[in-house]
Length: 247
Image (tube, rainbow, N blue to C red; front, side, top):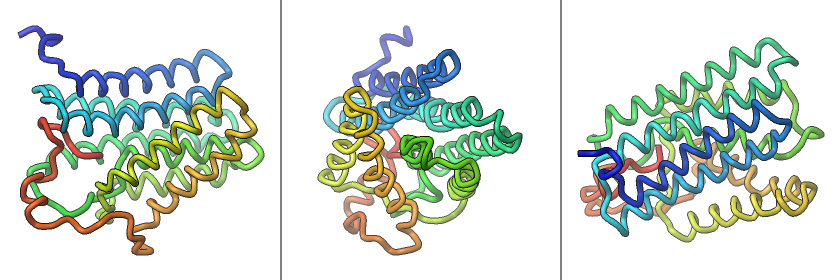
């Protein structure tokens, strides 16, 4: 069968995720618009969350599970690593090492998730790669006056280690919480095109939200409601239509 005939609507959203990741790298490499490159990764994150929602409303295809992981590897693993290197690589030779380590850990995180996908778990083992990328993006969006190379390297290292760790992160299934986070990201994207100063000020909100999620396993933040056994048995850690939950 022609591969294009195998595509379904959720797969098209995953491809949007991939295109935003590639576009982010291209923008950062060929222009001075580092901020727009970061915005593209926010759009990729929204698309990554939307494909699962759409898969529950429409029939998923055979490509869904693999396509989702490959898109995530590019947009949330390779892209942020290259953006950090392109923007800060000349300031400190350690940037290249830390950025490469982040990309490697992100890909390993995805590989481990895919290899254990049949095992039903109440949470994620290790920080999801999407969350790691958005944590970096929201910090970088705060602007040059706040972003420091030392803290950026420390954050990159911490995120890398958390992605491949065994720390259990919650799966946020409450649609109200997901809608709120998507709205916050959407407002951040909109403000980028309206007023950069307002965008930088507003970016503190998504940054704090991501910090809350980052520390939630250690502070026992009640981000999600408990999943009952019936729902857990039905989902088995998979999105509808053979698509992974957020990785």
